[in-house]
Length: 420
Image (tube, rainbow, N blue to C red; front, side):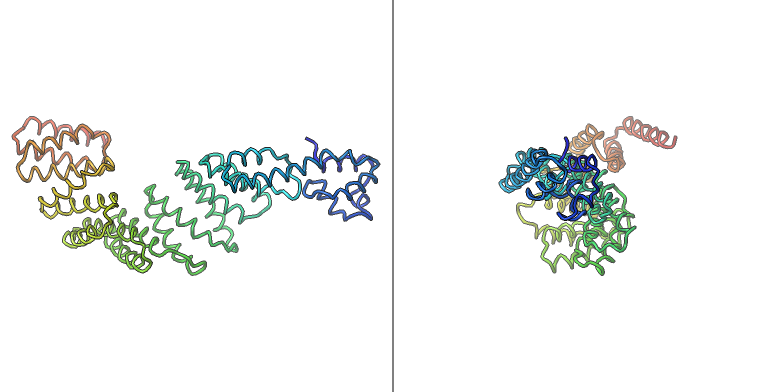
């Protein structure tokens, strides 16, 4: 479609005018340039003067001018639809605008509005496409803050779209732009690093997550606004996963102190759970038991997820302490809940199997082990050695020598397969 600017430029060149000569006595050459590039829309009086100088009637440009006016009206209507929650209508109006856009409309505004609309209707794939348009526009203009902000927003949309790995890449790209341009003062750097560190934890990149959390603490001196509780909590999780249990406990204590100060009860409970886990791994069972019992008493009655987590940890700690009755009680209470991850359910059933074996209740232990055997393909690999050990104990206690031999042979074959 031929725009008003295109028509003006083509006609000017046909008539042998430069932008300066066409503008002389009417307007600046810069204004003519903006009109020709569709970055500005002339007033009707100016358009008529230009048409007279070029020897055409103003009607030659009228249709294009009407289209521009319609675009502005449709944009205003789209904004109204957005405010009223009519997001699909707003999208239709915004997509119907004629490109290149005329003044006062700007591409970055349209892309942002479209991204917002798509996000509101949870069409995150289309929202990401709009953010990518903004990223490209930012690079074209050398507008690096625009690039950084839209990498960030695209990453958030990608994560909501279920593409966590791609979201990590976009967070990392935003961070890379900031690292290569230290002159940029952008407080959003803290948010980017916090999200990226969290993604690294979820992906099992624990050392990278720990390094990034350390960097975030340094950013506090530049930008402020760092949630130290979340940072220390993240460091505790990273250290726990790297088996640095003493550091994990230290960071849990720092995080607990921060959460107590800012009244973040939910995160405080989660941090106590992590501390109990770190103490258990460090074989400081009495301390772990005390922390977890105190935590269980302070969980809100309706918070089933955190209650399950504490009961699960208490069952494991009690089992390690040889307190089979309490281990059994906590496992039973946790298994009453319907919202159980399969890995947690399996771990709790294994606790019950071990307790049954300790009690000499071989038939009940067999039932727990049968469930674990039938579900082993859906269980975490880390749990399988403990299951095999419980099966070994059961076969020995029940005198099933043939099954014990077959179990040992299967284990030997698995080891040989891994070694090959």
